[in-house]
Length: 192
Image (tube, rainbow, N blue to C red):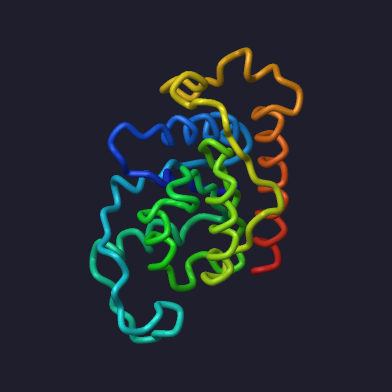
């Protein structure tokens, strides 16, 4: 079965990104083997290596970074759930990407963002960064502009009035899941 990691891209106190990640996991879990990876559980120092990880064949990453690399390498695709901080993604998520070498080469990444503009600028900055680590972003993105605290429960249930909206977040998620699975299967086949 296809293995997808859903990465919670915020470690702030009082964050809401974990609710969005759980909502995605609830739906995607019906069609793939999913695991939520919370960056709270992977505390890493900021990348300070003298040579870019992609170009250092003699790299010996620091143990906490190696734990992250070993974990994420085993998935076929990824969903990044990001807040928008100061018109970009969070520093902790950017760092989790920066430490990668070849773990995400030719693997698809779906982008799910939230914020006052649905996290549009966070998505834009991730679309610039991800090709640098060999990842392929799928064309669709999910821009969640409703207030997460009131819109999604702790167990990932989307409020009924939001779920029923035509062309709303649920319809966007359904489309994104289908696209992610298509890209995951196509790229997995191509990597063989």
